[in-house]
Image (tube, rainbow, N blue to C red):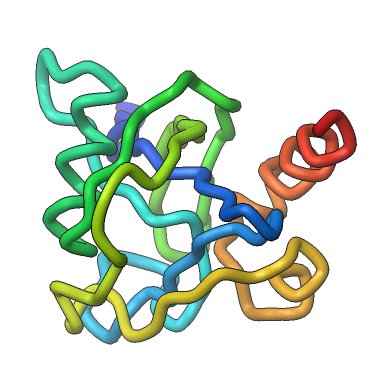
Length: 143
């Protein structure tokens, strides 16, 4: 019998006024990809809307309010060496209020605003390699 997906995750794609992307480094007790940088997010709960999910997760993890704008992309997030398979929904969002800070240090060890070139040189999650980096570059070229 084939194993089912581990779940659906929603990640926040948030650019600041300087065109830098907010990313978080996965902490020592993260479910997977520890030490890798990614757009922060979390698992979609049953009957939850994408926007509700990412707004809730961001508030819990970073103590700041964001607004969901729209689905930005969908990535097949597979990590065979960790036996993980998620569908990752990239959600374009904007910071509404507050300054993001780490609320769950066991899950997240660092945060910051970085250019796409900087992120490309950092150890980043497979979601970036599986399509998010190209989606982000295409988006930035249009704004």
